[in-house]
Image (cartoon, rainbow, N blue to C red; front, side, top):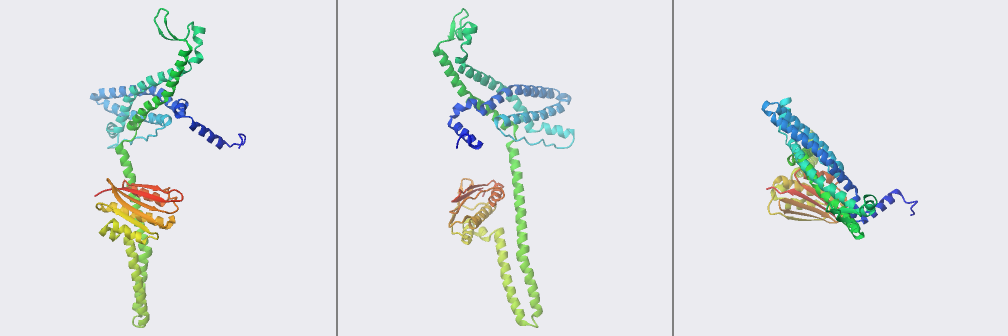
Length: 445
């Protein structure tokens, strides 16, 4: 393919390939990340000064006037304003440092009205963390600015020295850049070819070193933004638990609907038909005993089918073998009913709590159902063991592979159910197989 016919995609791929062949240490001084972080440092000092002045002045005035009770609302208003600092700093970190930090939890007001608003602001931990960020950011931004700007300027100035050295003898009457002078006309000038080249080499080293120094310093800024301007660990955990609770509620509601549907469409309908058949048999008992006996025999068969359906339904809710004998026997039972030969190995020192045991059982049930329906496997295996404070289970098969927990699939729903109890689902299923799905559950006794 010639250059005239090469598509834009191919040209882009070629440029990216050449870029990857250039070492990172050489690309870094001119890379986009370097310029973004430099801009972050340059903007950081004036923003930090403004925020520091605001926080110190506002909190000092509010605290100083608290004796007159005017300071209380002023202090609350100052803390409210500190949240605006967080909005600006999170946006700056998102744009220049590529750090996406969520906003903190909202202020919780104990009561409506101005008194509740003031109390909520004064008791808001995130607002105080924003104020602390403004206080800490000023000295750190000053230090970062004083390190980065001189280092960057000196590196590029020294690297380019061979190109502008001629300015000194032509316009300043000096042989070169003065490094040292005694005040009486004597001194050390960078004038010889060796000194000029040495200066350029030192400048090149500084230029190559500067991006890594900037990355290290802005790494502290990332920690400050993440730790002080984002949601607290407790708030994040509460959000996760609320989400998990929603998943558990939805799962329980879906299970109840499934049980209701199975009862209504299966056993209930069969029992209604059985009652009607027995009623007809009762009417024919005297006038046509043979027909009545045949109808009773059919009803007896319907009773057996209804009992089987109820037994399967009860097993789907919670199998008796799991309650009586534990995971080993229960998993062996479902493996025996699987359409694919399954090897089961359970190595547990003791039984976990029934809730975790039930989740592990139904997880294996669903995974083995997927093996039977979709894998095309000739053999499968189930392993269950304990690792530290985690209950581990793994289902593998030699099928066609390609399983993926994409949104909307059964594996995605299974992953959500495990996540609701601090569990984890890991899918390893390359195209062509084999498939290996590992689940983790908390070990609780």
